[in-house]
Length: 493
Figure 1 (cartoon, rainbow, N blue to C red):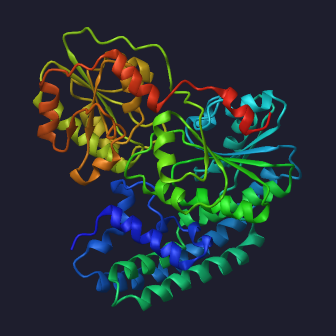
Figure 2: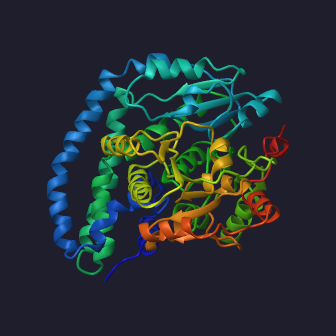
Figure 3: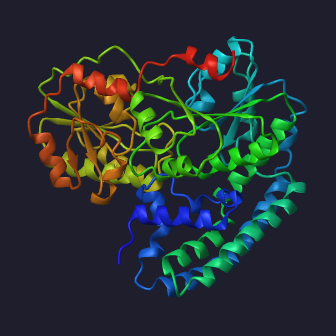
């Protein structure tokens, strides 16, 4: 019997509730933040033909590997301990702490933040000191990336988290992780005959406690708590996407400092299958403020939980100017996959098929700014680039949308931004992935394609006309114009 993504997510929520310990949130395996094919791969054993046999085989193979992983973490923490001399925080004068991500253009660009736009700068301009703590997504170049971040102006303190724990923190980490892992393993064995789905999830999670993602969540919480103690901090600001670390860090900080104010910002589109957002709202009992990009998301969240205080602050992606449409006789199709390998490869294969089966049509592939192409992706792009009707775009987004007749997307925010143009957004995904459609909940329905042939048909049929007024109305419901003044009350400035 097939277990759906939703049922898996609900089972994980029940497991966390039964364990009655928020410490388990350190393990991202125990929460489906967003049911993308990439994220759901790790739950494949649930739907295998012999789940009990397969999970035992999985454990026999992976338990020795976890010992090696932990040994590597400990050795790396010693070898890279010099990073803490650069990170060195004696005391911070900051009052508001933003948790952002040291990735891609967020490191390179001089102004604003990829996730929080100019919120830190606005708060700083009101004489309230801000600190931005960046998670470290890069394997090396710590010195270079740290210098790029700290050289930014504006008077904001910026810190890039080292890649590993301090050597003296390893014992505490091991004690915590081994204890949590053993409890998952024990309860998994107890239910192996009565409830195989629950058992597989618990047993596999016991191994995931030793994965890098769990380690990173633990590391982040340690650095946030440390910084809060070494400062006059009173407010913590995080993104809101439904990741387990969000609730884990909030719980840890509130336990340490109950008077802390918590603010979360939903900076990107939220979809139906973003189960982590729903699970957070349903299980959270802490009074906090959630900033949204538009009324649509405010209403969505408030229908799930009335505990948080919701404020529509808007999005930096909002732009009142309508992008002019393409007047060329040649059709232009833009592909905008998310920043994952599976999504990018899927779109590249679609592009290959369409390039070979259409005439008088130009195809553009716009890679996610934070995506690092895999070897296979590089190979496919190289082959596609030999075709006359394919181009890897290096243009600005508004330039691509200006000439596009169609925009193929899955979970990308580009679909929302395409509403400012006359391009027709077309969702491309598997039948069980329709819950990833960022435009799926709207009153106006846009095309959905699940096969290459359907994609071909969608660009050969006449473009459906949706009035500029209707498109602008939908866009503003999702991404309204950003209003930083809304932060005055939230931040008490």
